[in-house]
Image 1 (cartoon, helix red, strand yellow):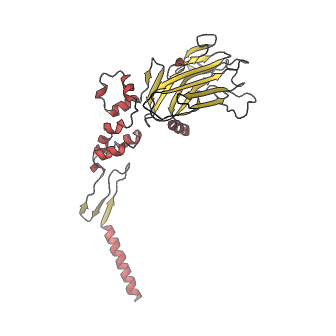
Image 2: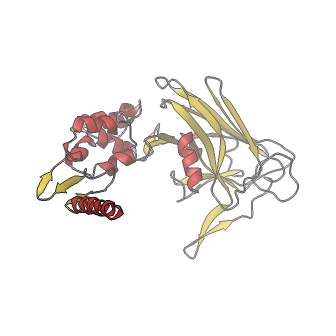
Length: 327
């Protein structure tokens, strides 16, 4: 009886193995699947639909929810995906509300003949606005609008007196020059931005460095002989918006002795440093956003000097956090 039961189990197992051996499953795995599986039973083939069979408008409907980077990657799958990745419907969702105004600043003879994808690519390059007092561009990976305001566009106390300030060329700046402070007692820098930003949260930062760059025998060297005064009192950075938002940050730029408690130190000697001032939120993207910012150290009991001021940047807060994680 036991032998009969064992023989029956063996025959069942052999039949199952034979059935599986007559089938071969070929699965092509690519980015999100380059094709669906096909099952061959003996000589009979049963084809199933693949990604190439998905209508282009359906793919475009999915693409509008993806990032520009993901869209460009998926465009390499097949013709349908490539066609959907070039649809104006997809890229119009990625363009900022002010893209037509930005496009008008570019030296293009027929901007209306451009596709939305081509417009997106053009706006990812820096665009100089208002007589070179501001540069704006879109982050290629996220589509976020970024701005940079040079020191030239700011109100700097004593900037016209060569005893205190000098404009020096700098190939490390996107504006090719920086304001260099030699010596001053009353240090104050103010600026204002008016721009139609897309809705979202933005971060504002000052870009500066202690020490000036020079070249000797073809090599870049840094001169620190005029740096003084930044370890005695903290520098105050602030921003305010027209709708009542405020942010304040205080920090020392150097540390040589005891400092006040709870005041951070940002070591800016010899390195370009982004001093993060704070965040502000744009709620209404259909109107101009006005942002005022300042950098002050007005304790007249001591002088300070040896500082290079490059620019102020405004970028989406999410982009800044991702950049900080990558460092």
